Length: 150
Image (tube, rainbow, N blue to C red; front, top):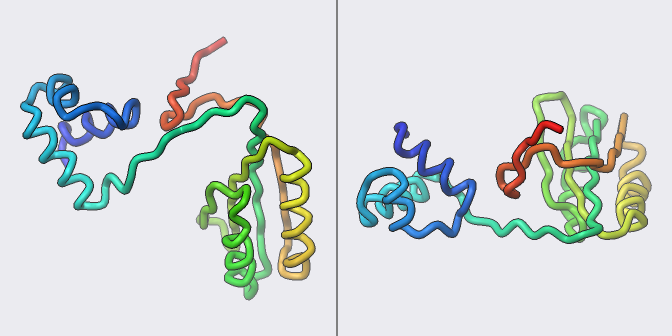
């Protein structure tokens, strides 16, 4: 990947619907050259997909951190991976036996229920579980939110 590819990625992060013509104009190359660059980034797995960021007034985002007992990690991970109604993302982190989840709902009750079900089903396999509701999004380059100092 070179500097031009990095510029393409920065532009697409801000607007994934940008046309090849607009992309080429922004980086000083033809539409066809821009298209070839984007397709290569897709083929190489650098660009894995395109998403639509939908904002709904009243949505609550909860960050859930789970630390499992050493030999129970895979079982807990398998269970939480099936809780897809509210779970948007699940991350395996560098912390030993740690799962980080992002869940979203328009109802705090739904999110509390999700956590209760995880505790009920996996309670004996979990060493720690911490949940925090997001109060404010400071920066989200994928959602078009940039940090603005107050």
